[in-house]
Image 1 (cartoon, rainbow, N blue to C red):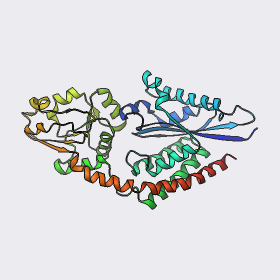
Image 2: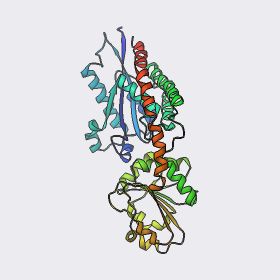
Image 3: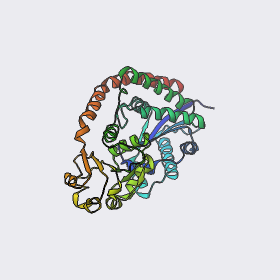
Amino acid sequence: MGQVSFDVLNARVTFKNIPLHTLSKFTFKDVATACAEFKKIPSVEECVIIQTASRVEIFTVSNVETEDSPDARRAEGKALVLNQIKDTWVSLSALEQIDIDHFDQTLEVYKGDDVYLHLLRLASGLDSVVVGKQEIFDEIVQSLANAKSAGVSGNILNKLFDSVIRLAIRMRDTTGIAKDVISLGDIAVKLVDEKAGLDSKKKVLIIGTGEPAAMLAKTLKKKDVNFDVSSRSLERATGFTTILGGTPVDFDDVLAGFDKYNIIFVATTCDYFLITYERIRLVMEEKKKGTLILDLSDPRTVDEGITALPGIKLLFRDQIAELYEESVKARVGIIPAIEKIIEKELPVLSARMKRLDA
């Protein structure tokens, strides 16, 4: 039998290249089962999947016996493995034909040192939706634990992930990048809680399906607050709620039932007023209890004219922007220190992995 070598591959779809409401179609119902299916691909020996509200990432190890079988690390071998990964991904997800047709443009694929670099940046918090947030680190740790428990990872990926996790802990502790991290959602929900009180009796709505809306949804979910989600299309709202929670509601139904909501977060990318006096006047004129609306959109998408209606209190992003921007600025200042550590540690990690290849 010949010498065994390996090729580490990372195939991923993230919030950076597709909208969050579309990402849900790339997710797997059961990650352990998905890993087991990817391992059925000839030459794929190990698999770990990181699946969160903002990313689906597959890590595989292809083992190759250089004397007794075709080398999957040659160009034609790599293409074969990647095509099989894509085919398996399609078979396990809810991708539509248009998504399949554009899969090559959507999918990011990296190998070797580029995979190690990506994992270090991700675990340290540099490449998460909110820089420094503890959440992505915890998800990496949990993904590895789940893979080990299911028996789908192995010596190579276990060594890689364990090494990255140890380095990430050190980077986070020495630089303080994870200290007092607050997202836009955290600040917005805190403000609304102070102004109106958030409890199980309140009817809460998020309008929007982008990153600010995702931060809101995560914070509300952590606080066990139920919420509806609406967008300009019901399909978007449904895709968003599939991975971030909440109940999708058609926007026309939102306008018709605007008076039912006590708290409304608006976080869209519209370039026009989505909520106007005329659109909600009839349903709001008879409302007895107040409605608090926080417009996080930039530019604003809620017309100030609605405050002429009884019981409406309108807040804008400006009222939390300073606090949020201070938090972001503090963490951005730490990024160079993290990058310097990664630059130093990447060759060490690469050499350590190559020793496993010997």
